[in-house]
Length: 454
Ligand code: PLZ
Image 1 (cartoon, rainbow, N blue to C red):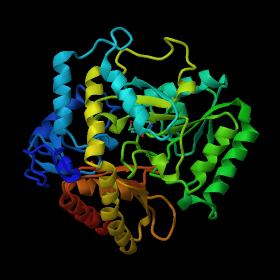
Image 2: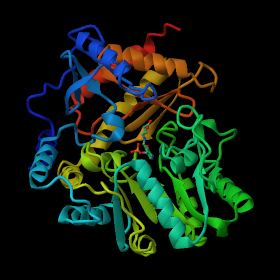
Image 3: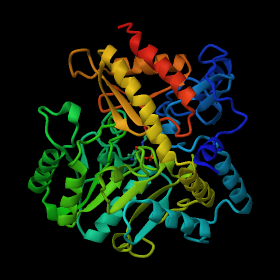
């Protein structure tokens, strides 16, 4: 199979790849479900789309009223191989027939081992590696911290401004943004220290990546002490914080400092990983080889699975029985992951991500020349952001981001927002999205950005 035919085989054949609205948004069935939801689902859980999903595949989400939306969110960077990708569906069905669960800590099975072998092969670096499989991104980050502390005997964890690492107690402490993630949920875990990152658009004066790293390192040395630091945990492109791409040189300098000081460098590639940024992992862009890498989202074609993969000496420093969990490395999720890994390579989805960048970024840059509220278009591969401000300033405009997202949804295009200031539109399409469909979505996004009813 050529990469092109491998790619099109990931799209369910009977789901038309088009945008089509056949009812008002939300339609009557969605409105009914919204009413049921109000009396059964906790109010703390929110949703971006006002409609309820019936099917999804390729670049399309179909709702319960028969409306078809273009999916520029991929379930927050999860369904990179496409939703209900036929190869993944078949692997899931096969595994579910054999057995759905034994618990790897009770009755181990081959699929778990095969996933760990593939992760060792796919992640940066040729050193000996080990993996542990868990259920969610937050759980992977928690385990990376446990492993780093156990291996180094040190307490401190360094995280960054604008970081997002999850919603569990330890990862809330590691996440930067108070609302909605932390407010009212404290007290938080101790020994978590926040350092400045490199955010080129918002530096007081232009500085290089190396200079930004020196600023970070100086803060760590003065306020924590290098010999107290177990791990530095960083997203190579900061996701929820606004798709912030650190200046070139920042990550390599930070990683080199970690190596020189016996600090475990943890790349949180939960959002950036698995071909999303045009390479299998975002770290590869600058040749950074992390000691540990946290993985989730794109790992399993939509099934819940996550992992910590890293240096064998660090991973194996933990005592027997120190890592685990009932569902971690569930066999159905592992089967899905194995089919998903196959798809990334046979369909060259990293190449597809680069093609998406080539299609989207020049178009957005040309819109930016005409839309004064766009401060910056940035990102890599199929992880692309538009940061919105009050024209002529750098003052974040969250209301404008919300307006654009709502207007897109009303026209049948799902776009997500993000950012510490809530003022960033982010594009995370499935990597299998057909180019014509993506063009149609960009037309809608352009008219939403240009229809300034401000
Ligand atoms: N690390 C880098 O992006 C999840 C969060 C959505 P979980 N990001 C989406 C929300 O509002 O909850 C994420 C991430 C990075 C860790 C996580 C956490 O992954 O699988 O959501 O626990």
